[in-house]
Amino acid sequence: MFGGKKKEQEISPAPVSSDPMGATGASSESAGRNFLRPDAAIGNISRPAPQPDIGRRPPDLSAFAPRRETPPPSRSDAESKKLIVGRDISLNGEIRTCDVLVVEGRVEASLSDCRSMEIAQTGHVKGNATVELADISGEFNGELTVQGKLLVRMTGRVHGKIRYHELEVERGGVISGSLEILHEGVRLAEA
Image 1 (tube, rainbow, N blue to C red):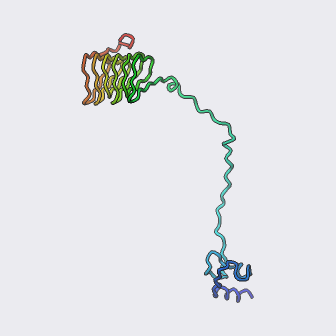
Image 2 (cartoon, one colour):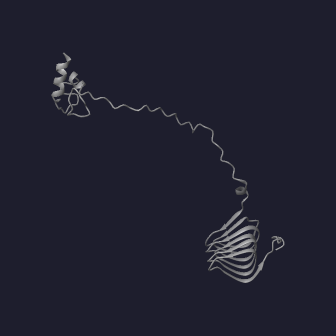
């Protein structure tokens, strides 16, 4: 009873119609029709592709959660005192208790109680400076006392009375004036 009809359905192609439900609407013949391929035989029943079991994502409740406090800055960041003199800026006066001085413009000042001084290639400093470390790529004119290391880069120019503990000059760097080496026991206060 089922065998003869099934063979007949498999052999004969399904009529192609512009109406997906067929001319007569939903019928028993269209129930077995493959709607994915209109030229498929009626006997071939299309089954949907197996869907992977994907679990539901939990709702995002971060908007309702209490905000986390940002950690306080480390002690060295909080106590760091940095002064940057940018390009095209001129500064005159006295600079004290500065951890780091970065000069990209012009400074005419007396500098004391400072840990380090960096003069960029565009920077010019004129005056007196007492620091632990100095990195000079620009120009310094005056009296310079460096308790630690004085580094003169290849574009650096240092003129005047220079006192240092360690000295490094890159090829092309210039130092002119009087030079004096500080000994191990000499501190900034004594210098």
